[in-house]
Amino acid sequence: MILRTTFLLFGLLPGITTAQPVVTSTDLAGLKTAFNSLQGYTRILFMGDPTCGGCMGHANDLRNQILNQCDNPDLRMMIVWANVPGFTSVYGDAVNQAGLWSDSRASFFWDTLPPDVANGFGFQGGWSGCNYAWDFSTVYLDTASWAGIYPPAPYYCISKTGCCNSYSIMNEKNQLNAAGACTATRINESFTAHSGIEIFPNPASNEIHINIPPKISFDVSIFNALGVLVSKTQNHSLIDISFLACGIYVVQTSFAGIQIRNRFVKE
Image 1 (cartoon, rainbow, N blue to C red):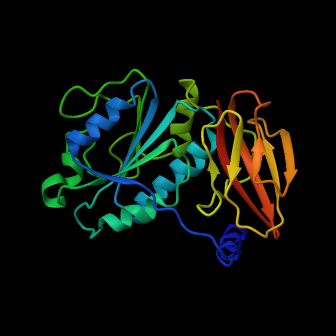
Image 2: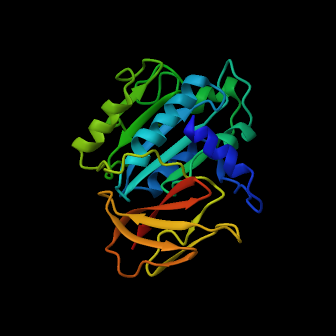
Image 3: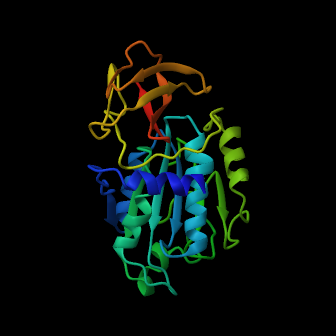
């Protein structure tokens, strides 16, 4: 309820625009190229339909319980939305779902093949041993390379449809922890990043800019991965971070009783 109220209040502020998320239309070959371009990073690849309730819930869990709680800058999330049999999803649905994410470690794709041909990029019986074409996520370690028609066997796979290891997002997170690919932050508040408040550049070396609307009094607090306050300023949209150690930080922007949190990486 608090989060819903936050967004309603935020939407009333003038001068705020919503950034258009980038969703790449691709086929199986294009996804393979994108996957291999991220070799050297731990990857989570998700397939789901953007109008399927279970799929959206799975994606929300990936965002809120893994990406928003894992400090590893070498973690990447590949979110693939597809129109699968039984649904009537379009590209705009994929864009709307991508708009819920704000972490630069996530990338988004739309399956351009029709569902009767693609059935989710031809997943049926072919990808990672899954018998379903949608609603699953697979973990690949940084050494994984996609050489054949389908990607290699994943390090770990979960699915709400039951094709791999059943479904428990915490089990997937535990697998990431076991592989040393996820360090849970101790900042326990939910991350309510909003597209109207953006931090740039990101990553940054010397300073970050907060694009908060003018004529608004605000406070900016920066926390490290342990939840320790390392910087606090008032009414300054250009923040010096040159003194900070390299790592992932949380910027909390507070105004009019609202708190908005974003992440940035200090190089």
